Length: 122
Image (cartoon, rainbow, N blue to C red; front, side):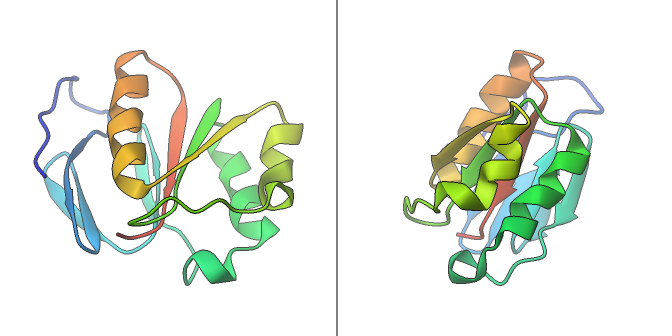
């Protein structure tokens, strides 16, 4: 699916997605990712079944106000203990499939929210 960029330069926006990848500002990124307004990094996980507390604790360094967890091609909920470090720090966590997380990220970016998308590949 292609999406259209609506914000200015210097901010990451999802402009499309497909099997195994997303497009951010028109550039393809493969695999599991952590996407902040100003950075895109590989998320050091092998997938849903291998997620641990440390995977979510690492997101604290990005200083988000809200985290969108994209669980892949389908909606899957992780145990809240895995992201307890985020909620204990007052950071909101929303769980959705990866496509919905991409769309929601763009909406929150348009509102100038400090959002981080923690995405498992489609």
